[in-house]
Length: 465
Image (cartoon, rainbow, N blue to C red; front, side):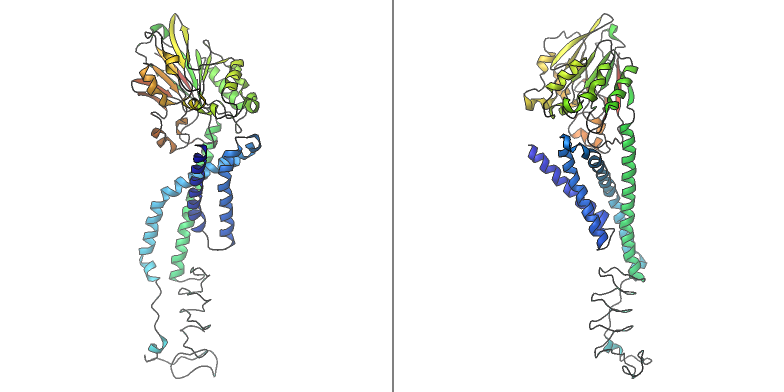
């Protein structure tokens, strides 16, 4: 399965870079050193992508994270903008091809010199005395009929100048690619084609760099505080106003520092929540690598405690999720592993349940809804922590009132938000799926490129009503 996924990634990367080469190199340059240099540069950047994916999973490759993931983001937005520009580019080229000026640039049909000799006209005199005929016929330079306008090198040369062995366009010599070096209508038409390619590449390049720059600033900035009030029909009135700080997808890793966790903890504490919930994907590495980055979570403050459920990335680490569960326990964050706890607030009681991520099934550590939700008092409201929104389908069968999830990052980089619904029933925000209310937080960190476009990082404050 892993081999198949890696093969698919490499195939996609190659296909994208071939397209980028066609639009950014071939369409903007002529054959020569510049084209060769740009081609090899693009090949190197293409190779950087799979190497980054592989290298950042080990300590030796962490230095690849910034250049590799930044190029991944730039590559993606170059692709997006170039694809969007295909239609206006095609329309512009069609206009150029059909314009009267372009039609006028078509070279005339060659007429044999012998046929022209029968037409009355003034005699043609060669440039030097004693050379050529003086009887009104065209001048031959070496015993062959020569075209009007210049000497031949043994091959028919076009009107207006000497040939370099290839047909040159009207108005000047060729540079060897059929692109005029001089003026004339054909030269102008060909230069417009090159201009169109360069203009398209420039627009796409500036747009991609601007978008990625904006996305970096957003991703590395403070998360947005999203206050959300959720109405639960069966909620004990004494629990009204109970507040959950919800955070997910923090993704502590090679591109984040301790300050990233400190800022999140500081912002959560400023909300004065009753319960803190971390809904998976806290880390992207082992405790040995990232344990120091997670220590600020020991400072979380909540009157009813802090809780954690695993996400898919906890199962991607070399040592599995167990070491992080133990590490978080030492920091005062309790993991809910297919289990539930009672939250007692102002005399009312609510069940808070947590299930393992679906990825855990590959390690015999998957979700167990019966264990987490079976045998409970169904007159109580139940809030479920589940990393992936898709887990709501099973939650609905167990009559959960509210599910808190993450995983999607809200799409992280537009237009990925349009792709997420192919796998998940919700992308971000509050929605109802199969009769269960689901809140999907966009996450407080990022995965892969340190870029967020259209989906700013988020810390959610859910208040029950």
